[in-house]
Image: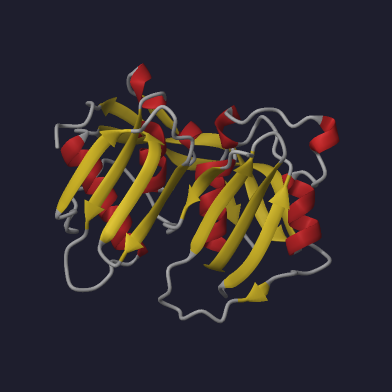
Amino acid sequence: MRSLLLVGTIISAAVSVFGQTPPSKAPGFEVATIKPTSPDERARYMRMQSAHQFLAKGYTLRFLVAAAYNLPPRAISGGADWIDFERYDILAATPGETRPNLDEQLAMLRNLLDERFKLAFHTEPKELPVYVLTVARSGIKLKESTAPQDQQPALISTVYPAERIFLPARNATMTQFASMLQRGVLDRPVVDKTDLSARYDFDLEWTPDDTQFGGNLPPVPPQNAVKPDLFAALQQQLGLRLDSSRAEIDAIVIESVQKPTEN
């Protein structure tokens, strides 16, 4: 049986980072369990499993910080070696009577990093290579979503090892799509300049290369590369472009961090 790897997140909200981390006024999780990921577990994803249950699975500390602050992992420096190879599963209960929105979920995750990992950092402006997401000259090939506006967007990639990536996106904005690409797929920030404000449903399939997913996927043999690369797939399937550029971003420099406290 072919093994699959889920990589991605349903949490996709833009979070700006400027200067020192301010004290957060947002509520934290009511309770959170942090456990090492099973060595046999290959998936990495983050989502609300129910109205009040948050799950992050298979995340290293660097990828948790990237998710919480909407940055690609390469924009995060400092920290001990373990932040890149020790993976964690987080199961947490959210407070209140209603399901938290995207920004609230990320704020709770930032609180957890502060309280349980004792994360301290500062930001520094750095000029980095970026990708700019725009509409292709041929025009978009996207279907506007009919889901309720408050329905959770879904952006989770399924990896068919040594073959292809399948991303079924639902009720997602272009800003959320760009955020997912920069945090979970590509090795640099992605700047959304599509000027598209609607929410969309779409399917995207491509053949990955070694610059994607942190270089952790097995190479795709030529005979298995039946899908286009990501750049061609974006144009052919969605009517979008990714172009290389450079931009200054607020990168995170970790000053200190600890392995998570006992549950």
